[in-house]
Amino acid sequence: MSKIFQNINLKTRNFGALKIGVSFIVLFVLYHSAEYMILFKNNIFGFFGFQLLFFIAAWFLGNWNKMNGFTFWGLSFSKLKLKYFLIGIFLGLLLYGVPYLISLSIGAEFITNIPHWKDILKLSLPFAFGVMFSSFSEDVLTRATIYNLFNNKIKVIGIVLISSLVYLLNHIYRLNEGLETLSYIFFLGFLLIIPLILTKNLWITGFMHWSGNVFFYITHNVIQTESGTYFLTPNQIFLIWILILIPILYYLGSKYKEKLI
Image (cartoon, rainbow, N blue to C red; front, side, top):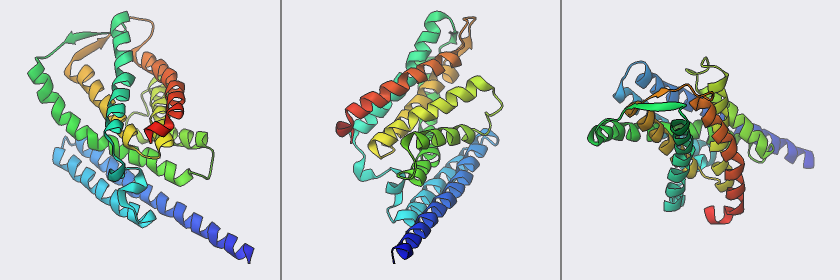
């Protein structure tokens, strides 16, 4: 009798993994369809259309997997708290702001043009709106999906490493940019999944990812910069800062875990 129940449990787990795998494929196609529309077609309506389909599909797939919609992906609106927003924004600005200031101060890069503040707002606000969708959708795809698939099946470090690798490979248009870029993307994925591991939800990670993307866009696309002649490149400085932040974020997050949840 015990063997029968073991076989049933095994089949149930396998079917659950299959459903998550199918969910990943569906969301992957929708995410990259949106990316294709904005990167290669400059089609804003196409981008938002596929992003809308992504989140509609995520809701249905969450119900298909566990009958709880967005909660399956760590995006329960009943658990959304102001502190998650504030912590995420702070961490995103800290993540990108510190290496940016270091790069400027040591000459690894320098500012060539600062537009009028009205022009900065005009250029930044539409981007901030659009990138919120792509940031959260990528977090669902590369972090929440991996977490749901492997949680309680393998060690946490295994989940983190697999998620980081998936996050790296998800940057399919940047895989030819060399070891420097690939390294910081991989370890950025390592850093971004830590809040999900600690809080069991995606809110801090999502807001951290979003605010970091917005900060980088403003400081490198709206405000014009060029690389300097310092022996460290901006990307190398960014990578070093990520490696410093990983143990700090995990230590502080673990220490104050009860206050975070």
